[in-house]
Figure (tube, rainbow, N blue to C red):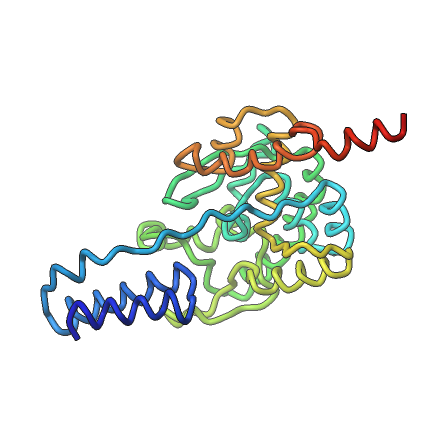
Length: 281
């Protein structure tokens, strides 16, 4: 296939099949890999084919009442995890990968290690979560003690730390805050060890809670992060502070949450409301 055929294929994807921009880009990337890596052909025209722009989408944001409704339908560690996501703005993977050493109760801080982009950051540790987190750690410690007694392999360590500190994975400091209740086999090494809570397990529980709370928004666990940012801005916190808490590299990414501030009482008043007031007078 030449330039005309490839362009016709990509145009068909966009116009007739109306695939998403991400799907279109994936098809183009696959073609680039086929020609350059598999066939070993250097085709300058293929590099010049543009990627479609992904349209900007407004995030789904819950009201404080809706958040409370969802939390009321969750139980145990799932409720604790949801509270943590809303109370700190963490991504679900960041919360699930928390270690015991990352909770600093003395300074009221929570340290996110190797977040998106490989960056570390510090967020607030809500005081209302301290009792629940201490109870969660007590339950996790029982699992850790059982693993130590059974001489089970320690938890997975990031990067090359397992080679540098062979016994660190068996220490309490490196244990998961939200451990799985059973062991699993590491597909890469074949080692049987305890993993952290699976994200799919929590996502299913969250979906059931949203339905039970009677909320019809397409809410997911990540919606709690959107709600965290929006509610902070509504409370008067400056956008730079929210940017740092979320770990955004560019403040433009955080600006998306200002859309809610343009709604309700802080927005332009509808002329229909003014007409209703005049009619009532």
